[in-house]
Image (cartoon, rainbow, N blue to C red):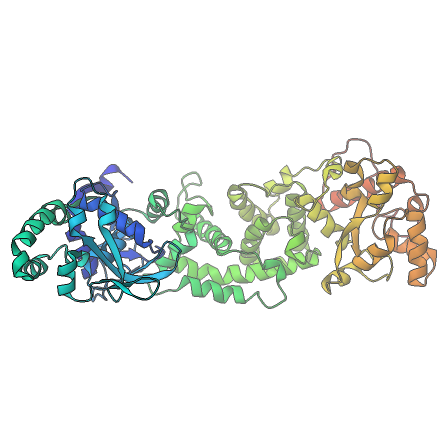
Length: 607
């Protein structure tokens, strides 16, 4: 976007408001409505009446490739024009406030100082306005829609309901500023005995106020027709004084609406496809997440088409889902790929269910849903084989335990989707996420809260191993599915650890935690393991051996618990968790001390 793409000129206020009135100047649909309080409008009127600067207006010239759905400025009459000449990017509130208060002959819809919606008219107290030592803003009077102001007892204190009463009170209606001659004639002829005095007052008022409005000019920056969509978005956000952040989704909604396509309704319909109770893991997928997945597929298609047409890989369009990539989406591209992304998200939810990730509380990375949806959309039936699922699973867990999907991830999205698709289709090269992922065993000791992806991932991994509830013996995945208050709890209770003098950083590690139902956790309480295991057997009306088998299913040594041996327990469980992580990542876990990486047989029966 070169400097020649925009220009700045001064334009008369009257002409700008006339263009608003005629529909020649309108708003892009993404502009949000907002009402200034009456005192803000009064302050703006006062500033212009004194000839003070009132800021700059920014417009976008219509007629280029970038088109938006438009709407009239609030209060403007319906216009037969289907396409306005210009759109207001900055200055909406000032132009709307001035249009309603001084141009159109209708009550202003605004708010009072308490934020209550009110309708009324703005007047200028002529005598106060011409005082050199007066505060011009004090000369701006706002009266109710009836043009009658009452006191708290309901008595009339100001009545401007007829022109004659306006003349008598010497209150000039702001709606007459650009066509003051009829009001001036009535004012000067209203009272014969006051004609000389009225002519004198009008002369001062016209010079001090009216002429300034007629001569007032606003600087207008006009962006040319060739201004690209992403530039409009960035410019709007930089100059918008209302602090409104314009999302990509809102801008595309306005853009697609120019072709009579309702993106917002389409998004609502697609989201309804997974709001059926079966896909709870998708509850937090946002409209921009959806657009990112669509952008990935669209840019992959563009790149492939360019390469097939003879472009070398270095100069072919890049794959991406950044802001600019989403803004460059065309409506045909969206219509082509949105259905596939919808199905891809549903396939992602089913995949995560198989990994025992059921709800958003324990979803390691919400961001990882985006490339997964794109991958499933591209692979479709190719993703349904055992081999394909094993590769996708390995990539997924490498992303989780390598903790590679935190922070800015768009670049990783753009690499992972083609890498993983090619790998599933038979390429020898592993995706870079698989290659780069590393997990160090000492990280287990610092995983203490579900704020980290690895913590949530390990919780899901434990559920994937089919642990049984210590009391009922039921599968923990079933307990979780039926929402039986499953959460992750301490194995050696916090109270016991504190009495034993164990540091909180050690006993709060995930090594000392496992998924349990709330009722089992209540039985455990703060008692030592040797005691609560006997309590569990009694409560469950079963043998100690059965309880031990249930404990073993959590990768826990029941013998260490029955001996209340915290150190032996922590050492053994660390090795077991390292083994689980190594298995799903498909690579050896880095350890701070030698551990046995094949403990699967140890916990398949008794210890």
